[in-house]
Amino acid sequence: MMTLEEKQQEIIGEFEIFDDWMDKYEYIIDLGKELPLIDKDKKTDDRLIRGCQSNVWLDATIVDGKMKFTSDADAIITKGIIGLLIRVLNNETPESVAKADLHFIKTIGLQEHLSPTRANGLLSMVQKMKMTALLNLDNNA
Image (cartoon, rainbow, N blue to C red; front, side, top):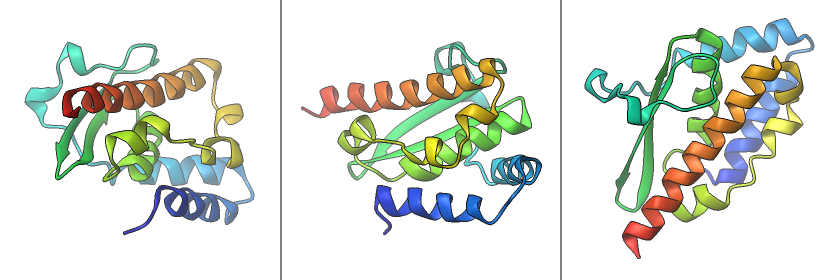
């Protein structure tokens, strides 16, 4: 099982392969195709992430003390972005998710290569995942 840090380093390494941001976008879009999809009946208003340019739904469950995220989005680039976050935060404890320093986002230059609305959406996704983790911390206490 990879640590949170190892998962981030793996993503950083994958992004270093590409010189060009068009190739990186293509890669992000491809990653979105591997997204663990949310059940259709869970695509509800309360699971929508506010602050995203497109519709992004996120669901989280706790299995054996680890968070399992599923998601979907109606834009392919957004699917890839939430897919990256899920790849790093999936199967981590609520405490790890809540405290996670997602430095890979800055290291790969993702935020500055997104439009301002998408960059805000990215922050909203991170906040939603961390808030969900915090709520689960409280429930498990």
